[in-house]
Length: 171
Image: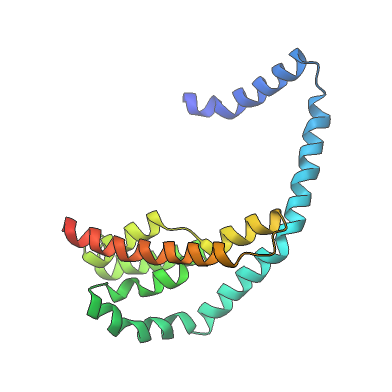
């Protein structure tokens, strides 16, 4: 048995001991927390559902592949691996979709290739922008997200560009 196997039981025991020492009704507090969590899920579910359906439709329709083909000549011209084009298109929308594309890049090009390393850096240093914005803004019921979205997408673009430059400098 590892010490890591005891972490969760120790946390539960610590919370119960703290509740007894402070004379707090732990069960009532727990159920109130669950109620708050379910309210949050209720608030953010429509945004998440729309996002997941939209990404699935975009990929299934071939839109991601078409955009990748259209962008490939321009990406080649600036020294960015075109194999990573679909990754930079999907990463802001879907983490699981981006991981699937990442796996395809590694399988096709190898993990030590320029596209493989660039894809690794992009995946490790970027965020699922639309997912994150929809979750957080839906949770706080924010309506004006224009500037946050613009800044996040600029950050995604810079991440992709800098990752290719950094990998090229390291190779």
